[in-house]
Length: 245
Image 1: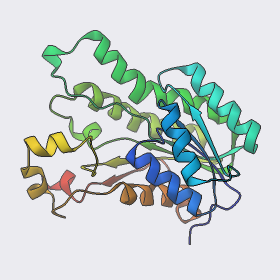
Image 2: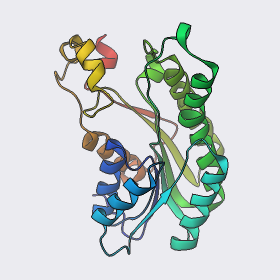
Image 3: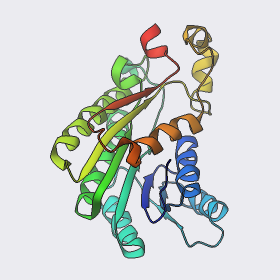
Image 4: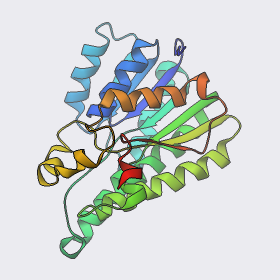
């Protein structure tokens, strides 16, 4: 039902848990994958693991906060594969800090990575998006509800949601733009939160954490022809926690 053969994916934050799951799924369905991350060595190693021959995977270091890096990875993608069929923005920074204790530098760093980074790469990619292409921006449940000790992150993700809807209006009908808002997903980022608030699992109707693969499946659907009439939408992946609490 999903076939990305001949398609080109540009994926930021590709060395994170969700990013790796997205890359594996798209590559498994035939896509050429340009994988970027701040951890250049880590993403290069993952790309070799994913595609040992290197025919359908290109790893690039990218600081999401830097507009010049966004321009560079887009140009490298086009130089190697000719166009962009799917852009998925998964780069992010999630750190604990109360607003009363937050420095201006911490605020700006979170906004720069979690919101500005989406703007930078989307803007750079627009001239190279193929007919029928798709953008999926990874937001967060925090962008809808707020988040204790993560106001900078929540504010940025709220911005990602409205940026995505605005892009959907601007880029239609050539390109569809949607967002995915994960909730509590297995991985190192969520473990400290669960340790402090184990009731979050109890309050989740599905009674468990989600997996990166489950988020990746929704991303793949939104980038596929199965979702060719879906744009400007946000899909929650949180086991029902958003509606239950």
